[in-house]
Image (cartoon, rainbow, N blue to C red; front, side, top):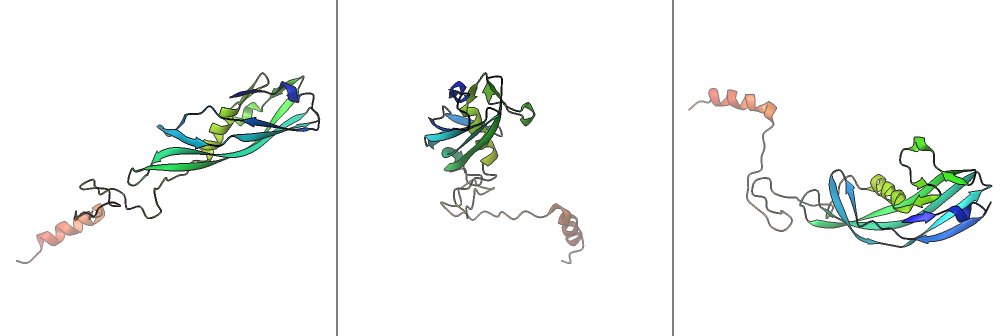
Length: 174
């Protein structure tokens, strides 16, 4: 959603609330695409500080569907969105500091989706689990160990100990 902020240029030292929504249907993180499963409409609060700075703040939550990192079952991940940005105002133009990296404002139009995606990328969990004690998938037979047990031998010897194992085999008495 692109939001025209030109109307805020004349509102010095005033706070303005604007209801916004996102047009995001999915987000790509680490080469994977996650579909949005829910979001909440939210309000962005704008404050024009004597026509020098424009402060933008707001918060909401968005939910995405992601596979569990251990068992691959689909999980709903709730991502908190907390927007707190500052833009420069000069000569009736709102701009951002280009050293910050991502530019979400162009010709007095704020790209709300850009702000939200940046927050999603920052707040995405490092590991997505269906439950805290997820047992994952058996590396031998591929069964989901949360749903059914298997009798597979999953012992993997430390490769550094393999040489000792060979020594014991060579000197084993029969």
